[in-house]
Length: 181
Length: 181
Image 1 (cartoon, helix red, strand yellow):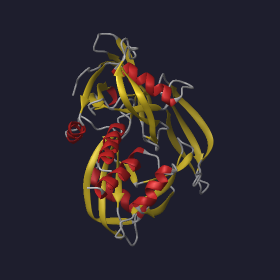
Image 2: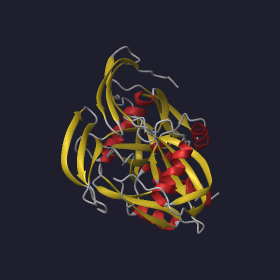
Image 3: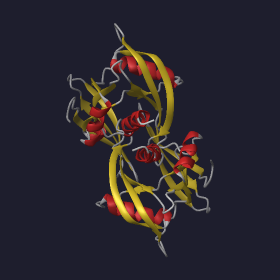
Image 4: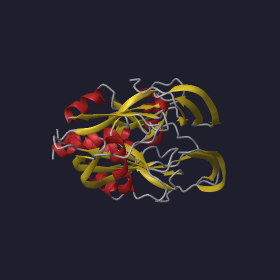
């Protein structure tokens, strides 16, 4: 998968943040010409399709500063350095929802925005949920509110745009496809 | 949708690129404490589920520098300033594939990565495709190769990870759901 490879001539660091780093690469194009690519590095993330005994979907509402609004999303979180995605998944499920999963199954991974960012999201299906007595807390600058929705209610939220991010839309389509199998 | 709103105390510009801009906002959290948010602004994009007369999906392969590999994706492109998404959709379809659509239908929009970026993708369904005699060219630093796949072939590409970006995975799920209606 190296078709039309763009070789790096030089790479200019722009920003080294807590979550993202930004660089501009000067590249040699397949025709020998040069161009620039603005690139955001992100550690990657996991997201969970977590289903309760009553087959409800566990969702979190949180404020998303880049959009200046809150969204209803499936639970998710960034990978720590060197952390296995399955471990991140268990940790984020506990921190964001207070649940642990009796069964955790890897579904798929996808890049969110390959034109400018390398962020990848690994999706897990979490079943056989039980409440943890003293769950670890979320990061102290994270405020989330838990909701549990039927698939039908969640699809309504997608229609009225309370749900409108890629991983959550993926999750709802995944569950709709399961239902229609 | 302002739950847990984070008020901006100050905003520090970091980078003003051709495609993205980056800033760090100092915010006041709901509990009165302060934190920082790293934010990438992106103009937004459209993507097209374009179906040929033979019901094949029009796909483009291109190199994605942030990933250092090529991906097979549905055609897509960034919004120009002030441009209506439907106009961008027609333009990108012509430039990337040489097709025009007899029928262009808006499906939905979603944010790709709301934790750090405001990028939104508007998805269109393009039908009744016909080849344009002298189509406008893609940007001169864009190299794409056209492929047309059945849904089954595309799903295989998803399994072997030639397809693994959010908008294209969305498109394939959308078509699978249509089939099972």
